[in-house]
Length: 210
Image 1 (cartoon, rainbow, N blue to C red):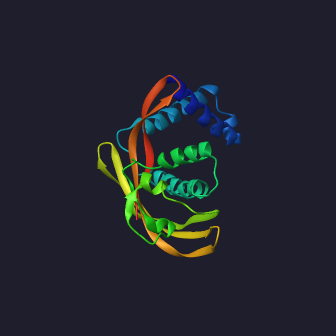
Image 2 (cartoon, helix red, strand yellow):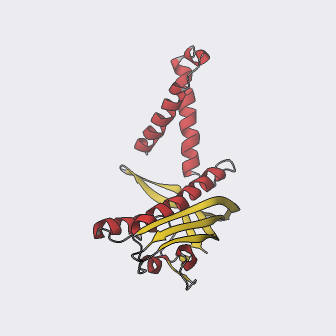
Image 3 (spheres, one colour):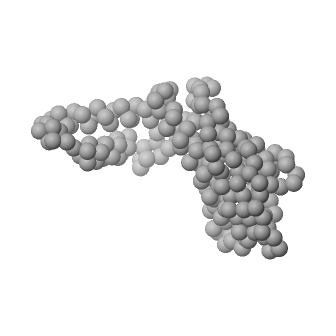
């Protein structure tokens, strides 16, 4: 716990010092230390709180949007052949870490497959990808359902977005028409290790995509 607090203190101290004004230069060291201590406590309480404040929910929604973009970036690497097996295994794990569980289902519309059914994310990643080049982008990402508390340890919502795709196989270059899609988002309490300490903190994950 001490290590985690020190990290928070260092970050906040940097912000306080980098934005120092003429007035703040006249403050005593005692006042600065008190301000820093209070800021650390507020931030630590948010990390460890049993309920997220209303002002923090938009920040988690922004994080969810970033994880959706990360998914497209990782898939652009993962689905292209040839790819080194060790690198592919790492990309696979990075993709799985974005989702709330391996039971999440993804619609084949994501890669414009003709059989547009929902399949588990693991089965989706085991697909026979034929791409020599893949440029998958998620555009116009918006909140379709704001995060709301579903139980003591979880919040849920959803994002809507436009899937844009350009690909090349050994025989064709394809520019696929944009498709409207939606993905669930979750914020849940998970255990996270910081040095010798293990804390329960809030984490953002993606869910079913259709």
